[in-house]
Length: 286
Image 1: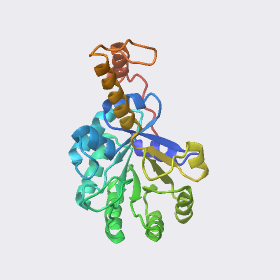
Image 2: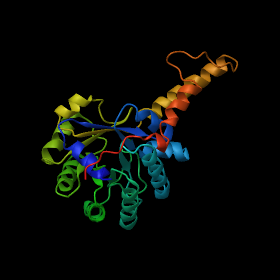
Image 3: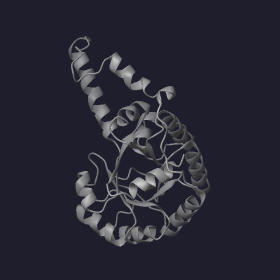
């Protein structure tokens, strides 16, 4: 299966490609009903798998195991994986890329942060010297066979953002991401310096980037939009509300309504992930 080619072809198409951030198999099951692609978000995975913030706790075998489960359940979805800084060493980054490609990931995002790393939309980020990051990126690019590689910079100073964006655009990376971009004007500036290189925009509720619709992003020259946390934050809100209501009603469950979920609805969602129900062949480019 050429999952990288399938994602690469969609990114090169005329319409912007949205990828929804998922944090576990259940959120992925719901996302797959609405969108054709998923983003395996470091923020969401760190929260779900460890109960910790996204500041470098993720171990690469855990993310590989998660992606393997996703691919088995969702053979037709694009799976773009956040691999942070490649787990520090270039050799580890290449090993992880080989593992992910072997199990069917569509692509990875490799950032230029140095440890201790931070979520791209919080303060305190530090970046590697550009030459060090480019060396790591080139090794990853030489390692991948079909996998889409997104080169990401977390630079925060305006001249450095543009310097790094221009340098990344000269590599063989398939897509470029400037994370935490703060304005529409800065999207235009980045678009200008990277030429024809596909551009990715990351949106996160309460983050540093503006809230922009897909048509507006496409008009700005953005090719891919990732939504890191809509499922995670919606779950946190809904769980808090449900438990407040349960406590307020002395532990009596609410009546099932048209908008609420009961056991039959949940089972129906999960049963669709069983491999024997994947009756249609996976249509991927040869």
